[in-house]
Image (cartoon, rainbow, N blue to C red):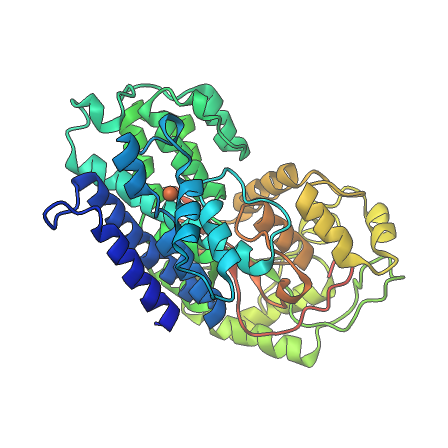
Length: 477
Ligand SMILES: [Fe+2]
């Protein structure tokens, strides 16, 4: 623990002690103190999962510790935690921490204060520096993860079926508001005016899990802790097994996973479909309208493809291959098969994994788009806006690709070899990864993983195989 963290912890503890009566914190305040401890623990898990550097880690931890500082004084003055009946508790927390001067002299005082200030806003403002952005997102994710715990505790420990006050007098066994359902399905923010039933309230949290957790590490924590599965069961009870609600609870984005994780999922009984980017190939000429159709893998590309197969060998008895028809993807699938000990396997191909994919509406337009060499600029525009010259709308294309691919997939493990752009678009649309840049682009053999659980849940992850460091992003790479 850095000197700053231990100092601020001590100051915070002394401040909270000021609200004790005969040494005891009033119960509502004690809940907030416990919440803060849990948010700090979540922040540390995110820091570790994301591999943050020491400086970022300290800023994130301090922001988590201080995010709800104003809650004690809010309750003392107004006798409520409801901001709409009192004050904005994030502004209040920010102001108290600043006035106390606890962070005076800290090199990143403003980043910490701003992360506190923004923690309860619908969106983080644009234009923040990277450190403030990391701290703001970390605090918001850590806070949400603890709010999941609080709901689960309340369901377990109150008589909510009979006691309406457990959930603020919301009707308990009641259908959800259709407006809330469609907002969650479409990934739009929910207007809190539309929360009419307990199911609506729970659905908001389903929306957070599906699309509002910023860090992959946060999404992985939500998955490990079973937060979506809990809400799926709870909503089934509240809504009498409404199939539309169930459908919303069946899709969960994860963060990055490894080949060891894929093995573990398969051993645990799930099926896994990998949409694999091919192995290393030579650079493609921008003037080649076939996007390097006949380019073979490099020797390194073939070696690492075999290595990937060797790492999945245990499932050689129940694997299925499908490849884009380009030479490099066919060679990748063959290489993986060989690595699994499967020789002379015929690799079926489908143009829908290749140049004529769900994402590209017009190959010639796409060729023209990328011809001047600014592949990443055009692709990032597509990912951010969902539209691009020559491309189909990203959500429709992703839905179509997923349904088509799952329709083709019959084995326990699927190896479908394809191209980086489609992987990135899929992961972006499904909320798995949205902070794309050139340095974290899909590397050779990195994959989309669609994990199909026995209970019908679909989880989406980014498989970083770690077998290649190359990217060489060019048209339809
Ligand atoms: Fe808060």
